[in-house]
Length: 115
Length: 111
Image 1 (cartoon, chains in turn yellow, purple):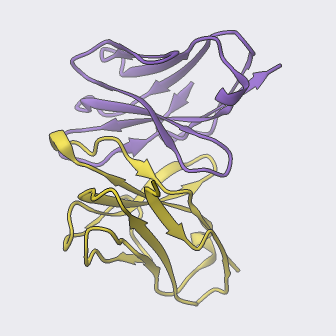
Image 2: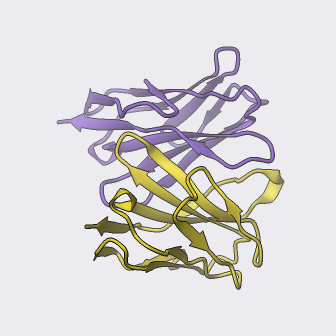
Image 3: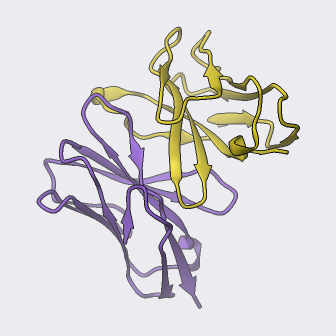
């Protein structure tokens, strides 16, 4: 059972370059999320999608964009990377039963370093 | 203990002892709470959840306690094992809003 698959696992990127982090889930969950994790700041929500075809902004959306063309895929794009976007990025999904976010299933993370 | 948005506290316990990890949440309207465990180099994993109509919920070796009066959540781990060493996050979920995570507590189990 794969669950959530993220790629790449790790990437070093020059500032100003464009980068897409890929995320695929095989659980047929409606909702998907992108978080960034920085030491001392926990997990902060970047963007989310409650269902295919819709997206929403989280706590720290600036500099990032997402798309949700289908249920399984939720790529995160950095149009022009900056050093402050150096972080570990986690994709997650949930079956949003009960009107809450519910239990999130996380991928293993993508470590991005912007130089 | 942990609070949403503050620095990462640490907790060290002897193997076999009980651990208590604390969390102060911010939104009095939050009605759903989750604890996650994150091992080094991995994504967070669900441990246990609790709804606001409950004060206590037990799982396998873990218990979550909720005190809505003081907006406090705790995770108790019985007979702590080396495999319990990880960062533990609490998260709160206000109605119709996204989960908000705390900054985490590093638990270290000493031999």
